[in-house]
Image (cartoon, one colour):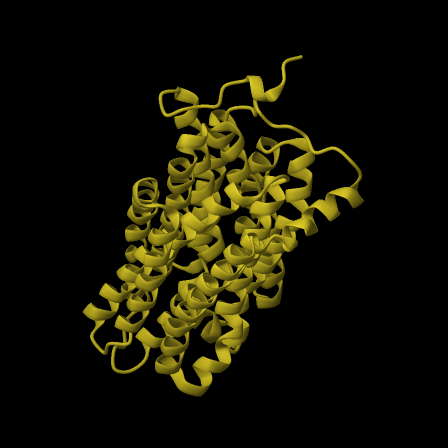
Length: 402
């Protein structure tokens, strides 16, 4: 039997490269549409089910928590049994809760189903980047990763916009049924398109050895910097988007759910920003482009402090450009800096990233309650810059002691 390293990796000239991009793009589109679909519905949930703002936000953060658990489990399994199986099952199984949630009037049952849905969604992000690193030629990995992450942005945008629009004109139940049907079609497309792994090498050893290898990543200071950046980026990004509907429904704006859902078109900038970041990093280097992404994110958050809806939308576009630039390049860096068990390294980055989602969607509630939009914006704009300074200082110290 030939060794996996003897099999050529796919380049952009190969049709399989574009099948990978298409299949993972469809899968990612559904995963992120499903994950964030309740975000524009938070004010509606507080009214319809009589729950608090914090409880309503659990429909996002518990899904994220389920995803984190799934990432930890599935990353081990995908390192042993391959990537494609978990990517395909992830999409197929995560469709099911969308057909059950509209049938219940219990918000706590909805939260339970959202947690379970988060777990099933984890198969795609747990395996996709490792799969790309294994199957795609090294010169094209950053580009392929950026294209994949751009569909993260597209999925987040589509899920929020369509859910808000359909809910405004019909009901949130109808929106969920629509997502379920779309997800079933996407699952069929992923199963048909995604090429089998050709260069996957199963991890050897016991489960304990796998755990030791997993924890070894936490001893790599370069990876720790990336993991911390993942938390900070998502904390700020999710914090703004979670409380935006409450802000725009209140005075002086008084916008409808449909109008608020249109602000999520700003994610379209992220769809462009991720591939652009990959292209620029090939010419200028990852670090300076990623640093620029962090600073652009913070600048956009400050712009969203405006009392003009137009300027808030401009700020949201700038936020998406900066965030997806920084995130896509950080994800690519993790795959490069991990010396082994790349699946678990990528999953650890995503765990940190989604810890930031959970924190931004629920743990920032006290800031919102204490100081409203102004305090939330000042905090979420400041923390990425503070972390960037910390990361640059730590990297210089590591280089000096190398």
